Image: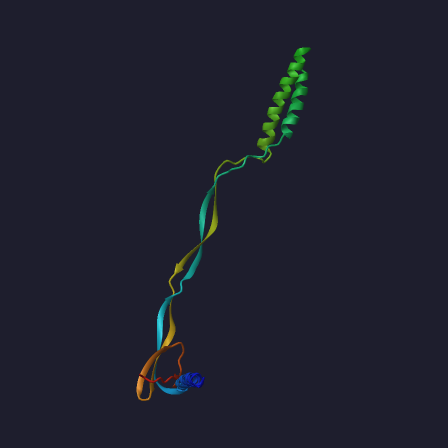
Length: 182
């Protein structure tokens, strides 16, 4: 039993000593400052197209597509007048026939007079009109943009260069980590 206890203590001691070594390796991390010797902006050309628009006038030809509006008033009045006049001619069955022919003729004449002379004429000719048309086109617009900075700095008499998103100024804060080599 004593041998088992001694073995357990030895194993636990070695685990704790390894844990202490790893903590010592992390203790070598620290922050320090380096002297900046050069900062060069990194730029690139970027195309940001823009629209150039103008208004032009275009002539268009329109053809009529609707039917003219017709009135029935002339046909009704013409039919009544023609029927009355026709009934004045002839006698017997001829009088009825003359009234029917007069009514039909009066309706046709009345319709033509009403629908041709009342300003309701249908203009079947094409018309030309001018309408504004907006025309746009894309134009290349090249811009120079800074994408980062090439920073050269000196730390412990050695020179290093890194690309950074900002200009650090005259001093650069460093995170230093030391690890032993095998």
